[in-house]
Length: 311
Image (cartoon, rainbow, N blue to C red; front, side, top):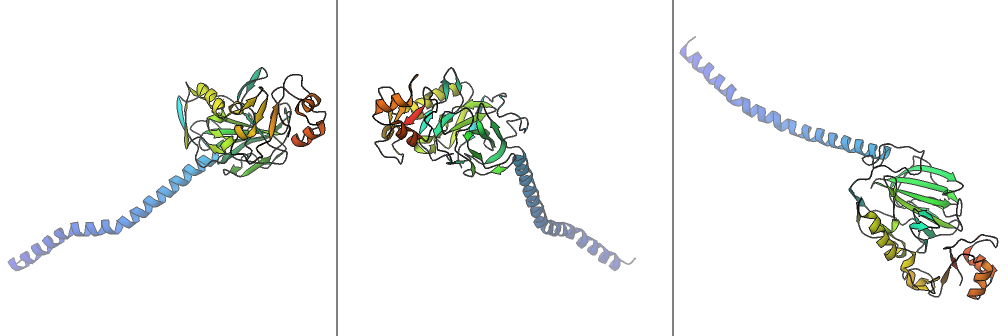
């Protein structure tokens, strides 16, 4: 090989070697859009997988399984848990509470009773998945249990009709039933429960029915203080937060200032032994008027603590 040929070969080899990084950079440049697309595909696939898991079993990090056997079954509570209350819908437009969370008639009342009439629309409080649709003659009557993505489960009892089915996905505000008087009930109302890991929390911790709003964007649940906080919430937002006259009468204008009722509408809290006849005499009205105002029958048995409208 002549020196000239050897020189030419060396120059060509040098050029080839020096071009390798450039070719590598060109290859990386061509590959970058592909990598970005693959990353986007991976992200979409991951998000879809997460969403499918959420739809399959909402709040799976709190609950061990998804089953339709029990309305509620208490499991281990976390020490603390932040519950997202954004995106809520009040389950009813009624602002009138008739019974608080807590001790009642010698037993624990695990929810709030809200005055509704037969046929009133009941809506899902948050988005989630319907876990139970059932009838319980000596308890909730026709009721619905929904597990929500924020970790809560809500229970809607004594309805006249259920409008959803088990395992159905629902959005906040979607109609799930109609108000009623089924099961162990003394008058048409909505029994509304909020539970975390099967343990009943006072709905007044999160919901303000009188102002038709939630109390904040989030509720920070703490296992060592939620019961004390629940008692305070009852004093602030429960039945007893209104103005009582003679211990048995509520002036609605004070109890629910934002309510769209006439300010002279009054309610009577039934005492032990009272009847429709005795209440009518006391309030200067008639049995027929009481029955019409409260949509009840003349032979209905009154229970202590029951709330009746009398004018």
